[in-house]
Picture (cartoon, helix red, strand yellow):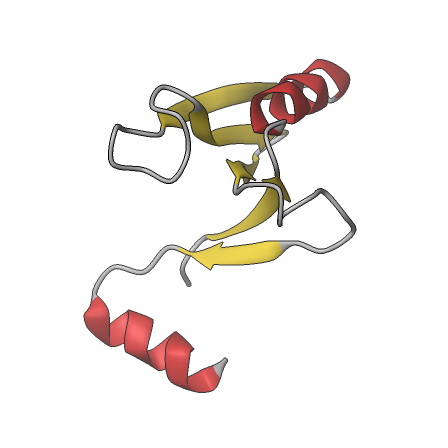
Length: 93
């Protein structure tokens, strides 16, 4: 079974949110940070995503822009090993 990663969407607060969550929950850490490049829709060098772990569960916080303010909704990222697996979940979901 592929690993499923809940994604939390923010305008610009992904890093601050991830820092807050890892400060609250034990056995937690930031695992990766990506940044917008020059060709991206946001300012180059701005945090794009923050991957973090809360007691063994992976999460990703995303700075998606002002149309993606934080709310009770989440998205799931399914880490697939190949296109066939992507197609399977695409068709089913």
